[in-house]
Length: 242
Image 1 (tube, helix red, strand yellow):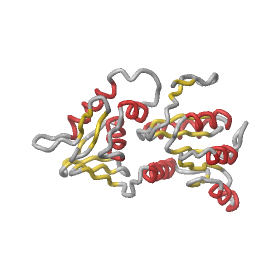
Image 2 (tube, one colour):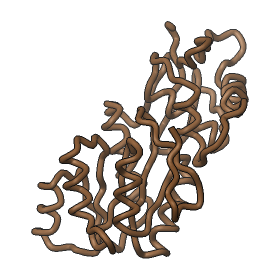
Image 3 (cartoon, one colour):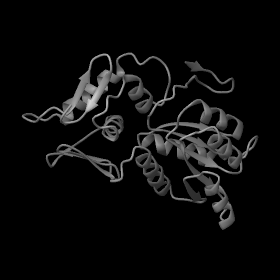
Image 4 (tube, one colour):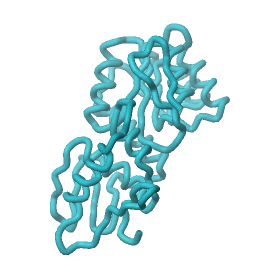
């Protein structure tokens, strides 16, 4: 189902399923824009909102993996958003981002259901590391080094090797592989891949198939077992015993 928000510049696809997507709710433009851009460059699909009302609408419309949430927001404050989400059973991890550095403020946020807390000003590298940790936690991936047969994905340094040989990937190819590896040996639909890799709505056309083809050519080296399998009518599986 496609839903449209009157003050949004685009349609937002609101389909509840597992995918690596982040929502940034921050009213201060420079922070919101830099965090959003940085997360996108890191290969994540990102939505953003400048106030609590729109932020809550996004958060209730989509099952985000992580929500980066400011506390001091116009319309609806961050703690109220957090309470509403938790009362309605939201499983999204919440990283509170705020200038409030008092212990009581941090404790209150955590007690109301936040998963982590980051004080402004902050280094983007730390925020990214915390976001990635929350994503791994959701997919029950404890080790930042993911192994699928002889394929290794280092999610900290964003490097990939197979049988010790380095594989060079584009940002989107890496994002696709990291997502598939987090769900290794599970069938992942084309729609899931589309919403994970591409930070936009619209027709999938054959873009997913094209990027699967790019990735397959790079990770399936000559004389080695296939790791990326097609399940016609269902999607794709990454694994050595599928």
